[in-house]
Image 1 (cartoon, helix red, strand yellow):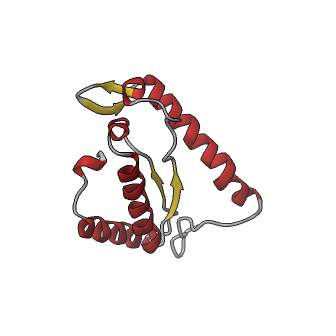
Image 2 (image 1 turned 90 degrees about the horizontal axis):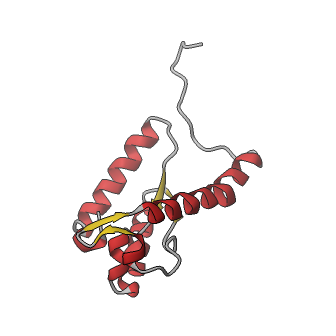
Length: 130
C-alpha cells in the first residue's frame, strides 16, 4: 500500500508485534524492507521520509531487522518508474531498480553477517526428528 492510504499508527504497531511474535515462535528470521511505492514519489519527500522512519521504528521496537530501500528510485520522477498515473505500482524500470537495490542491501548488509558466522534464528528442529 502507498503512504497515502496507510492504516492508523496503532494498527501498524499491533500488527508488527503480532507478526514478530508469530514468526519468532516458529524460529523463522524476520527482516522487513522499507520502500516507497512509485506513487509515493508524488508526495512531499519529508512526509515520505517521516513515514518510512516511523515504520522502521515500529519494526525495530518489535525486534524486526529493517533494510531500507528509501532512495531506491534515485531521484527519478514517479512518471519514470510508475506503471500508470492511476496505478501506484512500479513499471519495468521501477522493478529493476527495486531488484538491484534489494540485491545491494543483501550483498552489503545480510551476506557479510552470514559469511562472518553470525547466525540468524532459523526453524527449530522438531523434537525427535532426524
